[in-house]
Image (cartoon, rainbow, N blue to C red; front, side, top):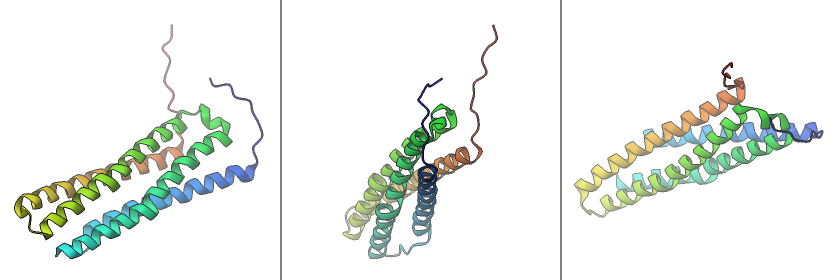
Length: 175
């Protein structure tokens, strides 16, 4: 059991942190769904259209996805500090671990996967090894979808933990 001095925290502070955490979670899931929607339905008939689609995805990541994820992670950790009982709850620690996993996966999809797909599409536009590059681009997009599904699943798991707050206790063996 963690022993921490109990200090009364301003209820407005706790509510403000909870509000920021909830809004950032909404932004995160909205950005993921927006990324998926643009990737699924965006015009991709020409290299120019595909480049514009990639720019839209980059803007979603830069201005909504990554800031929402960072705010969610920071506000979740602050919530654990301002509401001390969270430090003793395994569900809160599970959310923190999932949050770090999401942060890593999100940076992977917004940085490496998206950049790789944009580079491959530029090679196709310039006529460089078109057939091989098209195959590599299809693989990169497939990989990007897999990472997006994983991030969305982690995000929904986080929401479920925050809403239902399971005990996650381990049964002790009787002696």
